[in-house]
Image 1 (cartoon, rainbow, N blue to C red):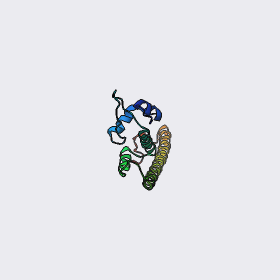
Image 2: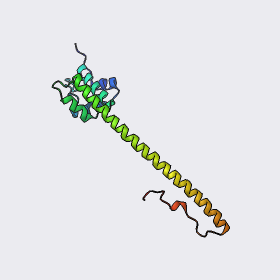
Image 3: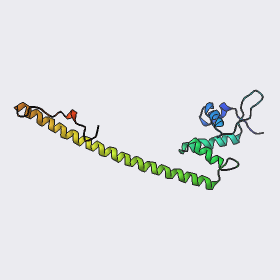
Image 4: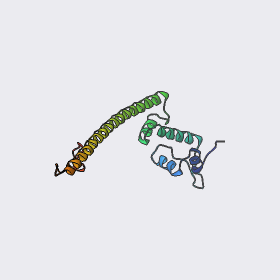
Length: 154
């Protein structure tokens, strides 16, 4: 006799909500579960394996649309090893590209930070010099460092 689970049991098994399971069914990622005479959905071990695959794919960074497309590539809703390797390799390449973009952005942010810090230090030095000149009465209008744009077009 095959073991069938109700939605709550399946949800607890994977640490997700029953509403997520219903959503995955609605989106066509998980086959609709048959209902018992009392109206409860019943899930087989095959459904549990499909759900496990979907959750694993999500944890690896695949979107639900990507998972759905992958599952639709085969007639039985299962991926061949070759197809899985292709998808995983493509996702790894996509991640490498995002990492490279993030590193470039980080470098730009650090460069901008150094430029602003340098400009701020220059402005502090100028303000200090202005205060000294003002104290001596030699410089009537000190430069206000708060009125600078720190080298950025504002």
